[in-house]
Length: 87
Image (cartoon, rainbow, N blue to C red; front, side, top):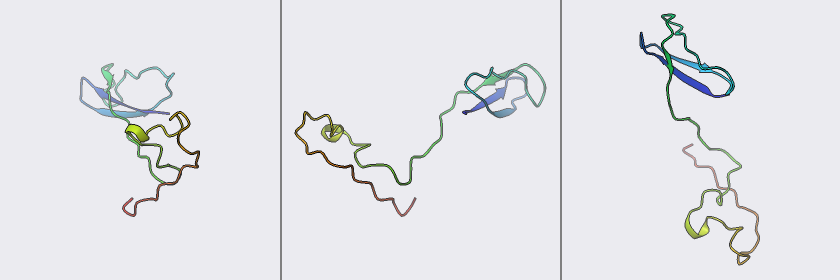
């Protein structure tokens, strides 16, 4: 379930709510009880790390689509990328 951010237009209170996509938008501020709560637009925060990501997953240019090159490349198993020590 996504976490939505809300901000009250009356008092400025910011609120986060874990809601289903089908849940109705919240309108009542939990701080001042006024119907001035507005949903904020924010970027999703996530990080792709750990094992299971392959070097062919994020290629660019001519190397981007190894499987769709018209059969000129040899079929091979993707090579796992080694995890960085800093992560």
